[in-house]
Each structure stands twice: as structure tokens, then as C-alpha cells.
Length: 186
Image (spheres, helix red, strand yellow):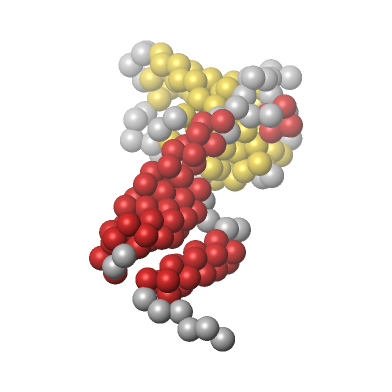
């Protein structure tokens, strides 16, 4: 068997490590992580080919890691924005229903007179809050249901809440608050 010396050994090890990392971790990695690993491997190869030394390999790996992460992270963001739109099946259990908040534990810091929530067929949920001073605010968010989890979100946040419906009441648990809602109308 022929022995491999110098930069060729580094290239072969880099390729093998990259292949092992991709093979072992792809099932649990998001695109930013996969991009970082792949970028580091490719960067190491390019750095070695250009510099023909360890410093070139390490610089290439570092640059590749950063660029791979950035590209993968943008792909993750794109995937998340595409998921903002819920499917018919994901909205159907609550579509076209209206609920009034009966209780929130622990009580929110902002007191309100009433809070009415309407789940729309298009995957939006509209909440109308009447404050104790008479001021009325309306907020629209996106929603979808995945199993027994109600996912409510806007571009800057996501709330995952376990929920269940028992007759005319809905019970939600966000982890921070327990909420009881009463169905309004039919």
C-alpha cells in the first residue's frame, strides 16, 4: 500500500472527516449547521490547494465554515418563512370559530376588560382586546395546529401551546400561562 505524505494526507483526512460528519449528522442538523460543516471541509481543501501548508488549510476551513453557515442560515430563514402559511388540515380544527378568554393564570400584567379571539379559515387569528380604560386593540397573527399543539406566530416570535377542546371550552398551556377560553356563538 502506498503511503500518503504532506498536504495530500491533510486533503484525504479532510474529505473523510467531512463525509463522516455529513453522514452521521445530517438527520439532526439544520441547514446552517450542514453549511458550516460542508463549508469548513471545502474551505480546508481549497486552502490547502492554494497555500500548500497547514496555515492555508486552517484559514480555508475558517472562511469556509463562516460562509457555509451564512448560506445555510439564509436557507433556514427561507424555509421558516415558507412555513408561515398553514395548510387546510393545519387550520381546520379551529377555523371559523370565536372564543372569549375566561381566565389566564398567572394574570397578565396588563389588565383587560375582555379578549375575543377569532380563528380564520386563512390561517390567521385575530384577537380583539378591550382594556379597562375602554381602549380597543386588534392584533392579527398566523396559526396552525400540529397534533395537540397550537402554534401562533408573527415574524418576530412563535408561541407553541398545548391545547384541547372540551365541549364549549378550550384549554391552552403555553408553559408560562394557562388559559381558559369559552366558545362564542355556535
